[in-house]
Length: 463
Image (tube, rainbow, N blue to C red; front, side, top):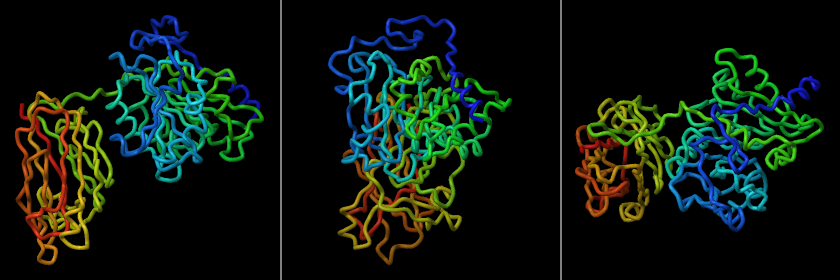
């Protein structure tokens, strides 16, 4: 086996795109890559911490922007770097732990080549274990919304636990977002079991040390060899580098290119032209979102949110088209319940209001008035006009207190009684003049209840 692995060390793919020319930066480049300004200062000057809560992302992260990003309107290729287990943190006070390894360390140490045209974003996992596939998917969607990113040039790489997360992402999402992936010292066996040959829809260049006692080298050799044996689909560009005698840290020599494998130039030879580019919500179409789906996801065209601080990025409309509109819970709900009257075949809409998110307090009405939740709706056309309809229902009247919920957008507040609600909804109509809406959910001060609810919503573009 070792003889085979050493041979594979030499199988580094460098296929070029048709029509490539050599740019002054030394990369294989096409006209969809940005022209960079001459660097000034140091790479670390453009490496900025974005703590959790300071952005619409569910994760804190480090942001690197190439020279000239702030002055122009070009789109840039994106590298999303996923760290190892040792760099897990709270996304805030522990965010600097990201600088211990990999690409963030190179940038912070001013060892990053600034002629590379990438935006580099490095999210921190605060959920324990390895970064989850869904978290990577959501972060990439967030990045494409918040930065000027070429959607055909999104690249993923991770080390150790981050490589495991990258493999799992590939097994779940294949080529829906990314153009290539470089997992280093990870384990892709479960990913292959899940995704199988479909993973071949993405170019993969994997790295590992054959003396790795933390993550066995079989975590790379097994899935790569399985993928190379696939024919439907066949590999686009799949290979591995196995470093002889190297332990778990096979990433330092890979990321700093001292081993001679230029992963950054390789990334730039890869484009994914099958990525769907979101479009603005069209006049006459609508988007539906179901909040609190532990009892079962609502089918398309409903977009589903199960996390109390979750999001829907590039929501699907009623024609199942990806839109620029995103829904992000920016003030977390306090909890979720599965006792909406939809569970009794009554709610409005029945399937959606079978469950709800709630904000409030068990300590009474006055304490409940201090609690709140908020959903930010972004990606709107500020020249357009929208209607927003809200749904919620809950069995019973909370011991005679009723469940009067207040929904607020700007200076306008509307109340809805959600107790045993089978027909009522709240509609904010003729919303215009902004590219985002902040919807606040609170217990109504005009009622006596302890909890406020949101089960679903429908955003419609009127004109």
